[in-house]
Length: 396
Image (cartoon, rainbow, N blue to C red; front, side, top):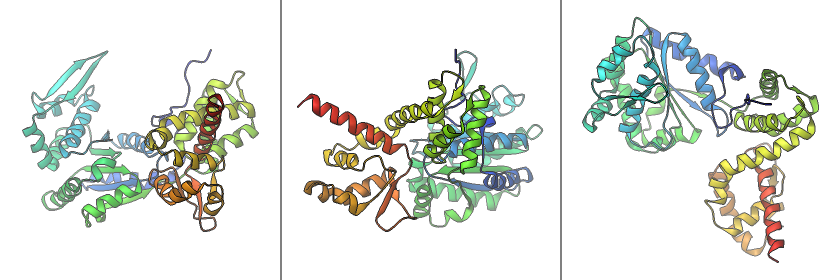
């Protein structure tokens, strides 16, 4: 009986399954390690949705730890305030230090603002007063250096990852604060053993630039792209070998094709196939079932909130169904299939789908050609179309 899948849909990939991005990894580590010499580095890791930014950052944190840097990975999500962002940074520093020998050195710095919560072990919760939090925001460099100084016999510096900066990158307050933070470090600190990496979509970088035009000059920008076919194949082989499952070559080709080099989809497809396989050999039939299962999972996680629940327009839904199961389409060919009412909203439909990260302009094809951002979305849209037809027949 199967126990545990080697795949982790929805979570960063385990370090042992990390593949590819060697050049980007070397570039970032080269800069992160500058913290050991007292030189601050600011890195911006950019990449599209599902590209594996968080998994990449997790791997970088793991490597930074081997360089004797105290590494923290802070997820911001919907955080928009500096106070909450800074609180999370210091809470995470306390959490990763909780079971370490140096914990007492840094916990004392925060006096009675730490709560120890005993839940199957001891967890740490950091809740300073509003006044204390504002002081940490205003004196962020001083607080970080103080912590680095207290643990200098155990660690050579800090590496802080601020992941998913979507919401906070839209606020002028964050851009201005970060620029002031960097300027203060440059003018007041000869030795600052801290590297910081922001993570987000490319457009988040544009948000920062709009809010503070001079800010982007301080970052070393690293972009990660889709994995190559060989890297995707290596990932699947490594994961299935881990649980003693063989993969037929033809089945592997289908898995690679539908994954499209996107780690998010690789994990969804791999996980679905793992639970479907019954004989320890992944065959074509297992993969096709897995692709359909993964399409349903991905559709419910991403397309439903982006499109089906967010957009109530029946015209938009009808247009989606008319796109068929193809991964790319020409605008004029779809227009020919539309009703008069659908044609009137088609340009808005295309703009909305692009803004929501569902489709993109196909730069390699003829003018007026669009493609889905992955090969799984059209499978889910096709499935939704079939379900719609079945319901329509039942009510007719």
